[in-house]
Image (cartoon, rainbow, N blue to C red; front, side, top):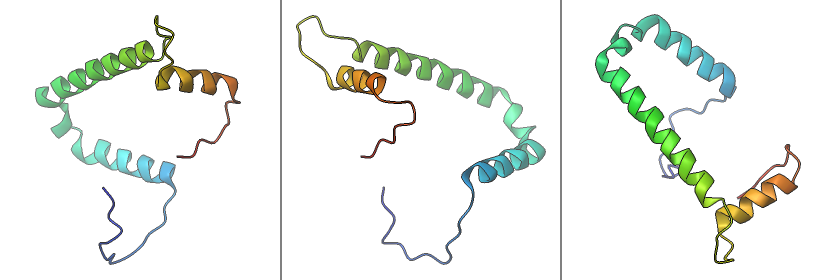
Length: 91
């Protein structure tokens, strides 16, 4: 959802990796006990299972179709294989 129409009180520039590392360290130090409960363990397990299912679906969609119709997922898979690893993709 674009939020460019909301006036900002302040603008900050941060290094993404440093920002994530700082946030993770804070959570480990201050929220470790709260996040160790059964509620979050079940949620994590569910998320892992859903992620595996989504990956499996993506792999199936990127296979060639038996009716010679080329899907977008298959075409992009072939294009990614044909391009160098450091290719910059812009949408």
